[in-house]
Length: 147
Image (cartoon, one colour):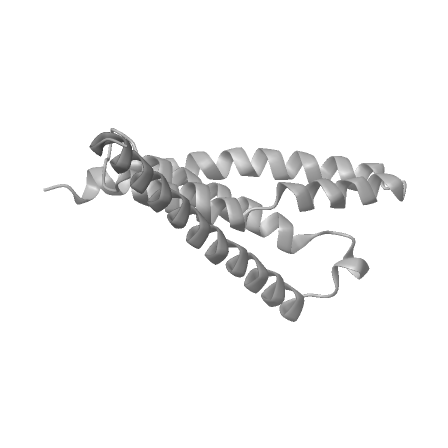
């Protein structure tokens, strides 16, 4: 094994560790949001709206937009390692497309077509808007805080 190959392997191990740690923290944060939502609101089964999943997906979209801006060429305030840790790891563990899909499937199976359409529509629209808001906030702060 030559020196370059060894460095690539070390970088890959470091990247996997960053993603793993970020993913674990993101999953724990998602669970914390779920506990907080259930503590402060009525049970999802009673309301029929999966608020915790909705919130983590919207918040995660906002955070992902901010991370992309912070690690992109325009701002370039964070390294590629931070991008792996935050975008792939934390946001990947925090957001829950599979849970959203299961909740939508359940709504459809129960014949709640209007609720399912509303949930997916609002989730997608606000998810996209939140990515844009995260990007925009970081770009605005970057411009406002530069000397």
